[in-house]
Length: 71
Image (cartoon, rainbow, N blue to C red):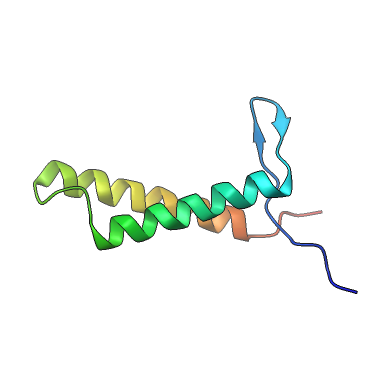
């Protein structure tokens, strides 16, 4: 018997999301991170700063989503 897929618990506007919703958000974040790493948001200082900020927040979200909460 296989283990159920373990996704983070996530709530949006008071509604706890289903596994498929959370999985979609996780995959979208990873896809956007890959885009930012490959393409960035322009070569000017503002674009680079925004890109770095998004990447930092995605890394924070990634840690939160992949860490098992205390029971």
